Length: 160
Length: 455
Ligand code: FES
Ligand code: FES
Image (cartoon, rainbow over all chains, first blue to last red; front, side, top):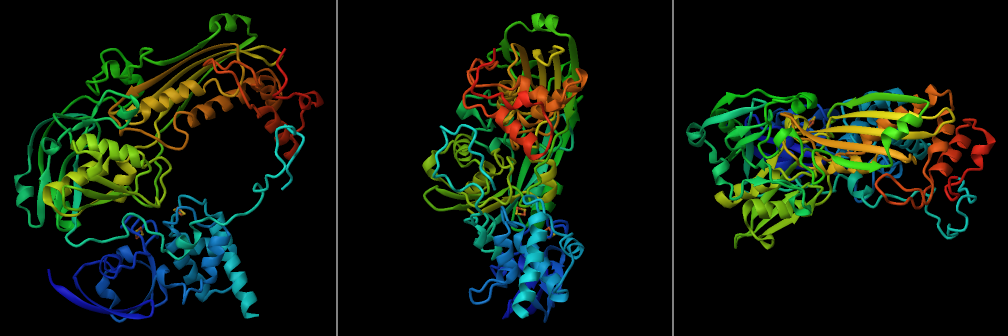
């Protein structure tokens, strides 16, 4: 099968790879670039564990062909902490017991970041809608919803 | 949070201070930064991908298996069938004396449930492995299947598993695990009311977000490292050692954070065949369930049918309880004979009843083998028992909490399985529950204690 060259920005650093046409972004991130923060929970677009941001938009890496990301900016959960400083969502998830086994957590945080980036003061309903594509089998969701709202509040206090 | 000091004041130390405090999880930092390593978060050059050919029938004889086309398929490296497995027959709890071995790693002669593994295909890519799976030809002769416990126990029912005559597990106590206390028939004669009800549950899938799997790496010297998300490291080591006929020191099992288990990762299914694949090819092997496999193939909680017959007096004493519990093991034992036994010990619940008769049956059907899940053997029984308690209270016109308080076990009471009760706190829990929920109960029930003997 033909290989295609792709370049993109991953968490701020330039990446270039030759991949087989048809390879998913999830495979490229995990297998080629050793960014294991997106998880493969279903490989069929139903669990959200593979959620990443492509040019700021939430995307399921398991259903995204890597070659469609040419020239894009990609953010993953693994790149969210900057220089050891946690993102407010990460602090709120840890403080609010919004993580148990941790398998869904990266995807949850990425989906929540996509929300807060465009809506810094979301309602509870906005949060529920934003994480509706992400499955968590451990927490029962309430702590996650609470953590996202807490992170939004923390953000606004910091800015005030 | 208020800690009530009135209960067991003499037994309670004063320096305990953790309850009511929030402590950070030790793994939270790794989880929120997505640095926690799960078993699949590693790559090895040259890894082969294992995919299974599975039975499309609930019950069928295997007439012939033809793997030649699959073996020639581009990217397919090796195809495994039953004859490649050194000790193909196993049962996961054989090391704690739950026998006999009753399940094939790869099916031989027969398949007994829809989804049973028959042929393993190892290929360079997942895609080539799936294509190889599609090229395996198996000639089946479908057999009549039993998909229901009643049908399985009916005379003349098709035999699911030749090692379990009559389609039930043979305990040393016979066809069921039995508990007897007093004389249950005599108890029913003393009762003012008798209530018999049947409770049934369907299988329940754990559906962990991370699917079951492992990655095996050959380390030279015939030694293998197996990165696995098993919840049962030592069952995995022991069973792999038996199945592969390899000493345990050749098998290095590496566990770690499990992406949701809930009991669903206690069986030993993926590791032995992946290690065998690695051994026969000399390459790393990854065997990770797809989502469909996790939902359809991994063992669920067993379906149960529980028949409860209780005799109760007008003034609220349960004088007799008879339990017939049926646990659907599916086609193979796995953890179900053990779960069934746990159920037998758990009935009649946290209540002191003078006349008890319990029979718990572990039944084989042509369904997906069931196994462990959160309190298996007990959880469904508790559901049945507590619904029954509400119905009994209603039957005699009594408050459901008062009815439970009257029957609650107390220290020194003999349980049906002959262990005296120790450290009971049910009465105090219910007293506290009625307080915090403002559920009114008569004052005299606040005078009861787990520490005073019943008259
Ligand atoms: S792995 Fe992409 S949605 Fe589940
Ligand atoms: S924390 Fe386990 S799936 Fe969400």
